[in-house]
Length: 314
Image 1 (tube, rainbow, N blue to C red):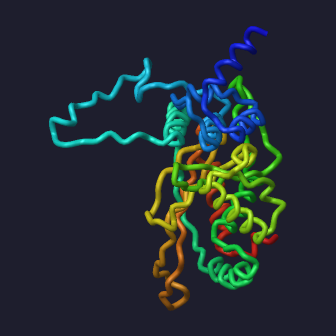
Image 2: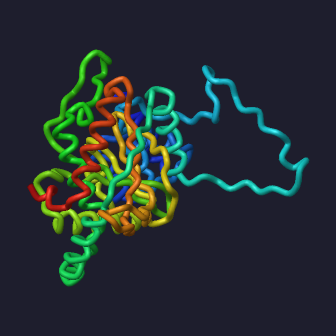
Image 3: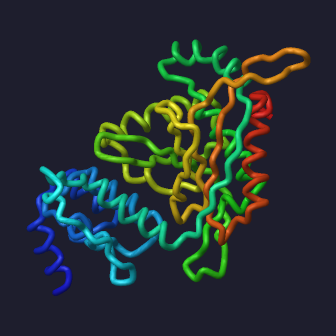
């Protein structure tokens, strides 16, 4: 009773709307935990979502720390003012929580990235045939939904990518469902909503759900269960640019696919040189679970499927 009274009293000192308090209760979280992690007595819904995102690995609640830790030497900060005028800009709450999670992942997961590419000329032609109908139905049909289907096929053929290391570190938890996390840029930082049962949904169903989740992520209106339960993640920078990049594994997942911008490249077809649309692929993986040959075959499997969209329908 004493402990419950102490927590209640502490929670009352935290400023949070009734909807934020309800969300925290539904997720089984203490307002104290969230408040301590962001060093603020004022909580918003986005803080709760970011806190859950940061704990997807099942780690203990993050605690405020400096950039360095007792185990890692600090990076010495110079006197910036001695070089010129400066200003201090506060990180958003999501930025701080994401930084803590990514830092833990970087320290705990031996990551390797495998690069490949695929010819998506026919896939893009097929998408163009369908996108008019999708627009009439009120949503956009992007390349990403085709890639999601290819990834799920890869997870089925290479189940190590759909597993996770258990708490003991001696076993793998093999998932028999296929939920994909999709990185979405929001005004407050990166959020990764999860689309469930991707294998059981059509291209149009995925396109509509992806559009809805992305919109609500940017508006900060995602529900708690919409950012949990992912098996594998995708991060696309193709609309911005870049030939390739190295995405960071979103542990406890063991893999993530990064997508750069597709480019037109002249290729010889018979006696002619024709432009083909080439999509770069970058798969980062946890080397404790996946070895290089498995990663190469997994990525090539996805690449082969994307060369002919009809294979995705089989």
